[in-house]
Length: 89
Ligand SMILES: [Zn+2]
Image 1 (cartoon, rainbow, N blue to C red):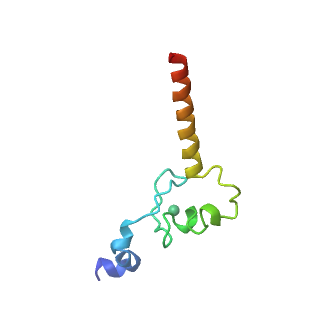
Image 2: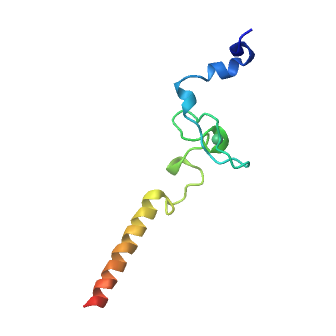
């Protein structure tokens, strides 16, 4: 008997896709080794099953979305630069 016969599941997951893992931090502090859902970055235990962004049922206004946050930080930076300039002159 060979090792592959002992562990048929491991032998099967030895494909290209097995390199891609969820990577979410588990309760034990290690990275999740589950395979992500199709087209997602996380496994079904870590949000891969739920839609993201506007498709999520908890989506309200996008105020906390990545894009909005980036816009706000950019604006704040511009404001600060402007205020600094005002103080200089
Ligand atoms: Zn996971």
